[in-house]
Length: 234
Image 1 (cartoon, rainbow, N blue to C red):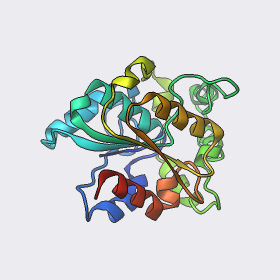
Image 2 (image 1 turned 135 degrees about the vertical axis):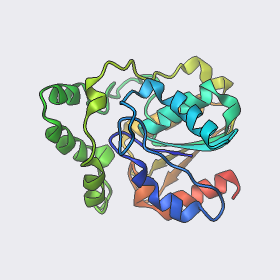
Image 3 (image 1 turned 90 degrees about the horizontal axis):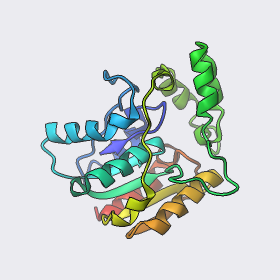
């Protein structure tokens, strides 16, 4: 089960559907507030959404792949429902707790909320597409990401959802295997987040995808798919 990142939708997983369907049933969906999803935005409700999706598909457990903000959703789900997760693959996860010398808000949500409140979603998209987390090494993803982000409406920036904090004290209780993947040219904050998580999880492995940045599943899909396939034993 593939869980996409912020402002994106299930289309970012097309290379994984194409490259991994020979060894597994590959599933993806639009998170609430993104893509064609009908429920209103609200990240705090997303672990429960995953329960409903798995129940509807009659799946007792899955390998769960979370990308960026979707990695937070995947991790929160695994902590809340450990029996339903065979293993986790976290791609470029954000920090669980602040670290010295790193920005507390790597994604400028406060600024984006101000712009959204002023009705300037176009500027939110413009600034976000220029952010290091959305830039590929050679710019090859630019047109594809503009196409995907074009449908983002900013609703999550305007609601009063409480968010989805991760209780770091629970991380040592998560016993399923975890693979944490970063692009080799990932931001310093996301690499630090990967090391932070790996140090607190009982069974965790770090992997870097050469020649890629944050969205390595799109930028270097073959290498990303190989890492996933190797980890799950496919």
